[in-house]
Amino acid sequence: MANLTAPPRIDLQDLQLDDARALLKHDARNSEQEAGESPTDYLQRVIDGLCELSLKDPLTGLGNRRHFCSVLERSIESVARSGESVLLLLLDIDHFKSINDKHGHMAGDQVLQAVASCLAHCVRPMDTVARYGGEEFAIILPNCRPLFGRAVAERIRQTVASLSIPVAPLQNIQTTISIGGAYAPEWVRSTADLWIERADLQLYRAKSNGRDQIRLEQPQELSVSAEEKGLLFGNLDMNEMVALEAASGDTPPNAADKATNRVNA
Amino acid sequence: MNDLLTPTADSQDTAKVPLKPLGKVLAVTSGKGGVGKTFVSANLAAALVKRGYKVLVLDADLGLANLDVVLNLYPKITLHDVFTGKAKLEEAILPAPGGFSVLLAGSGMVEYSRLTTEVRNEFLRIISGLVPHYDVVLLDTGAGISDVVLFAVSLASEVLMVATPEPTSLTDAYATIKVLVGQQQRQTVRVIINQSARPGSGQAITHQLQQVLDRFVVTERPIRLIHMGDIPVDPEVRQAVMRRQLMMQTTPGCPAGLAISHIAGALEKSVIPKPT
Ligand SMILES: Nc1ncnc2c1ncn2[C@@H]1O[C@H](COP(=O)(O)OP(=O)(O)OP(=O)(O)O)[C@@H](O)[C@H]1O
Ligand SMILES: [Mg+2]
Image (tube, rainbow over all chains, first blue to last red; front, side):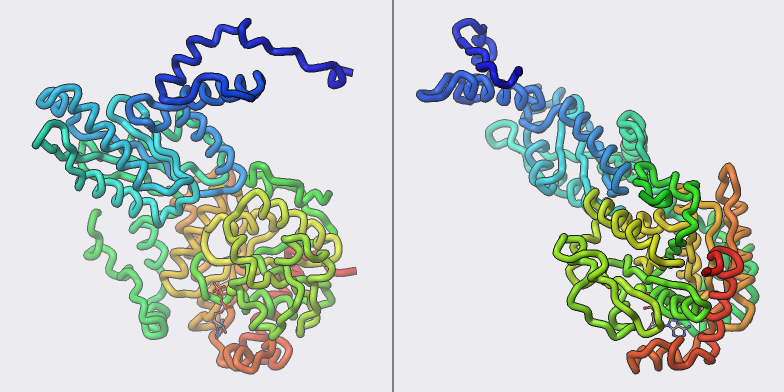
């Protein structure tokens, strides 16, 4: 029986752990075997540390793209199973290139770090903030109802815009971000690529519409267009409508007068 | 396991799953809140009992339905105890005034109003446990298209959409139907127009909803709305609530009572096999 044989003895001397140790040390971790720590426990700690490193963006300390993708995949599973409402936001620092050009790359890095830490503070512990690319970030917000999505994104945008980021002695700069977002289609097992693409399209719209703003894809099924509403009430007879208005105090779209009331015909 | 309730990894399949002759699960739902779902559920249950059916109403609004208030029942053991494993399903089922059975959520259920896998599985387990014992299981759901509501509706073989003629209620009903078509591939939704202003106006409203759906919602197989009936505004409804009595029991001959009996008759003809 396999589980009755003694576990293979690990001899740390046989392993080449120098690179791993150096990586962990570089990340300011205790990379040496501690007194009384068994070889197995020590190896486990090294592996855990490396796993964590492999998911982290070194500059900002946020999750990296690999981490982001794995969380996104898991979210798709839970959305498909539970219908949970999950929002993906893609955020991009506006005119980042000109910050680099004007103030130098060190300043650029400082802006990235400041924005990253600001984002991390803007969200709930259950949310995932990651550095997605150069000056692009991503946030995954589980349990985020469509009603709240815009408010959350708006708070993030404003908080970043209010930052005063020190880049040199006596020199602080300000920056803005554009945000695009999309919900995973509830109950549907979509793909990460499609989801990112939809959020990215919204980010593109936010950028091309003048930056420093938010574009969220409307969860499609929820919306009832003006045209649909017009048709919905258009043919109900006027007596009914008058009775309704009187009863409910709720003014229906003036469908009897469609031609003059169309705003975007 | 019951065919109707085999776990729905993709809930869109639910509508296509063959129905179990043992019992029918009907979801009573609405786009907007406060349009009379709970009133319809309780009184329709009583009307079906009069026709000889064995009926259970399940508070699928997780304690916000006020079904307990409408029925004047305040049980010690509720759905909450079943969910948390403190009681068996049978222990939580109560006889209600109209001759039907009821499973009340209990106040603690609010914390389950997020649809986790746990809640989903418990719901499935409970409903599949109930179905074999009743001719009809009515789900009194919450309003709108929250995940719990959609999930509860996905378990039902038939959807009864309650709407009032107010534009806000109609718009929300329309939006909800769109979601049911899109996400669950529903092909029929049964419409009840409650608090109608004039007799017969409900039919026109359902017809109008159908026309807008035909025009704006493109699906492989078209969605069909079936008008089940209108219920007029009736002071007896409020009176009954004030007296903590079930309208169908105290004043079944009032206009709203007659309308509900009529809907029960229509259900008998179309969806619920005659009890044997
Ligand atoms: N036909 C009617 N005539 C008069 N009053 C009515 C009628 N239908 C419902 N009501 C009243 O409207 C109120 C709301 O009804 P009810 O609680 O059944 O709505 P609901 O859709 O279940 O609400 P919720 O979305 O909060 O669960 C109740 O006070 C009820 O008595
Ligand atoms: Mg209710």
